[in-house]
Image (cartoon, rainbow, N blue to C red; front, side, top):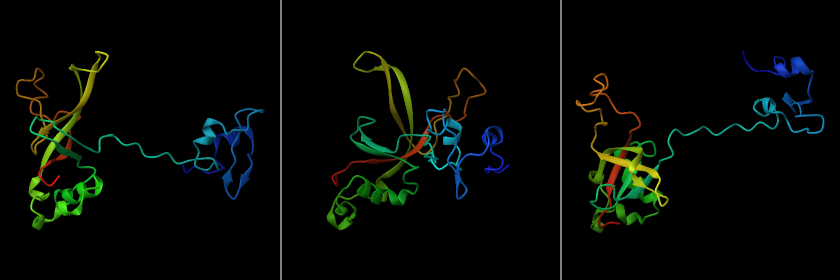
Length: 179
């Protein structure tokens, strides 16, 4: 059923609220407080309704770090830049680098061939500690195009060979002389 002022449960129970041009002013919290009640604030027909921002599943977008001990690399979520061929331009634009980084005539430059697929996951680890000695977490990166799966040695035979939840695809670009 489509929500309208005619089928509002509060209007049916409490009577008509003040309305302007098909928009409801809502019912106050109390006789003293005319702030719209919680139900009215969540109603799209109320004049004080603000459409909530869609929640992102993942906060990670991109970052640079030495994830494997071989030097700094860009780790970019594929949700930010889906196509491999767009990654060099995306890095220059997002990290505010000089466009000469894209020019092969310049010498060292970011090439599409420098972009590799990988996988990333946030993990809380007992062997990682913060400054208070508490277990902490961080992003962990795996090189390669195939999603990490449970090993054939996993204790649960039903999970063996199946994808491990929580991993998301990323692009990996090692910082080179162009940086």
